[in-house]
Length: 256
Image (cartoon, rainbow, N blue to C red; front, side, top):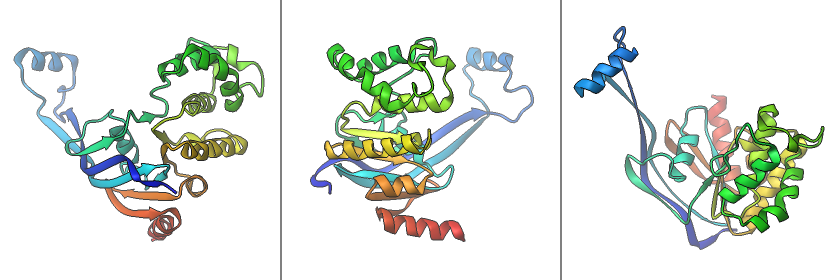
C-alpha cells in the first residue's frame, strides 16, 4: 500500500490546451506566406485550440502504481507529458516531487550508435555514475532481450526493429530508481516473456518507494501491475479508484 503521508504528484484543476496555428485559405501554408507573416508581424488567420486535459485533479502517493486508461485521444499521453514538465499547464497546476521521468525521454537513443553505447549514454543522462553504468550495463542488455537472436548490442540502433528499440528504452529507464516514473505503452512491446519481466520490474520500482504511472491499452497489464486506476475520457476524469472497480466501469462504458 502507498504511504498516504507522502504525496509525489498533485494535479490541481489542471488544464492543458494545444494551440494549432494554420489556415484553410489556399496558399496560406506556403513558405512565402509564412515569410510574409514573419516580416509583417501578422499571425495566421486561424488558430485552433485543442483542450486536451480539462480540469484534472488527483493526488498520487509514494509506492503507488497508477494505471491511466481511456479511449484513443482521451488525454492520457498528454497528461503524462504535463506531469513530466514537457507540456505547460494552461490553467491550474501540477506539482511533482523531484523530477518525473517519462520513459524514452531521459534515455534518448541515437540511431548511429550501438545499443551498448546507448545504454551507457542513457544511464549517464539519468545521473548514474560511470561505475554504476559499468556495473549494470550487461544486466540492462540482458533484461531487454535484444541479444536473444544475435549480438545486436554491438550493432547501430538503426538496425533495430521498433520493438527492440522500445524494449531497450524501457530497460534503460527501469535500471534506475525514480521518484516518479511515467510509462507510455512500453509494456505493449515484445513477447509475453518480456511483458512479464517488465511488469515485475514495475512492481519492484513500487517496492523501492517510487510512484509509477502506466498508460496501456492492455487491461491485463493494468490489472497485473497497478492497484489504482484513473479513467480519462475526453480530457476529463470519469473514475479514480481501485483498478478492479475502475476497469469494471470502463468496460461497461465501452460495451455501450
